[in-house]
Length: 433
Image 1 (cartoon, rainbow, N blue to C red):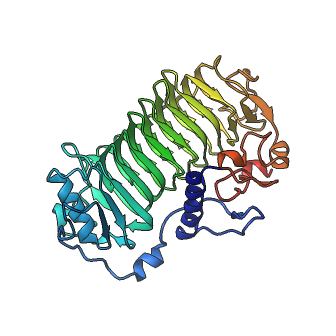
Image 2: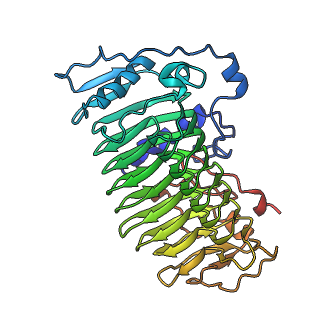
Image 3: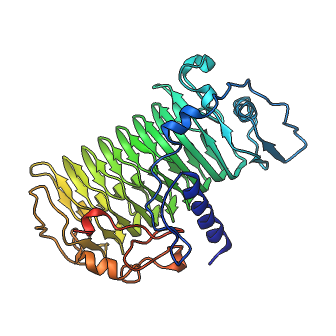
């Protein structure tokens, strides 16, 4: 396995511990519990000392240096100020030396007129450097600005990277291009990052990143955030476009919106754009074009070796893996309890609507219920939009689901459980009945 894969999987295992996930270690070194469900508990937050809203501190910056280590909220806010002043940090690396609590800038604080955190980069300025969390956590990020575009810890990355970072207990309400780590990334990378909390907006809203474009990559990341929005809303990423990729990642939070809503991504657009070796466990509720993994797969994009376990519901064009398909779905497994469209709306166990001729080798749990409450799906088959039947017993007897989810691609498997990263995952209730 490549070195980066090992580092990323290790980071995810640490992330489980940081987020308070329970469970027992498996023989493969993972945990037998499910994914994380959030950040600090209400009791923990209440007992923690109140953070202070520090002024922006730029005293740490020296133009002659290329590596900087930050340990205080004011220093991180200073980074935001430097970028907004036109410093792109190209060729430079910023490293977190300790966990940072940003709750001093949260609701009720006078800072920024009560709107909360000022993202690093925005409409007019971008961050082009490397931000290495070094396994640390930024917690308590708060933004409440319904007009704001490019919202998150970072507003915009362009030819930059964020890695090894947790952003937890976020509360973000903004307009568009919203994510806990970054609102918008182009030609950039997010690696071994994770998020928890609640995120809401209108368009391009994701648990980790909002809009991912121009051959960007999101790898070995996860989000447990609850995400709500209008269009292009995803548990991990709002949408990925322009040859961008999402791999070895997952989302566990519930996702709701109107158009293009997915458990992992709201939209996956453009030839060369892909999602692979990833999964989602959260429920998906939408108006149209909603899927357990992706809401809309369009313009030749592809979804490969993924699975979803959450219920999907909407007016029309809803599917266990994708809502609308104009691309390919290959080697995926729909394990949802139900996929339901209203009235005569389009639905399917794999994809709800679209051309599935380019798809192959997809499986669907035989007990998935439709809007009538039955398991009658008329388009079964390897290339059909309802996939080929697989029983709960067959899934449980083979932790790799017929060799689809393998260690070579970063998966941890265990008989009687579902594949995961760093840990095997408990089977959901619909597979225990």
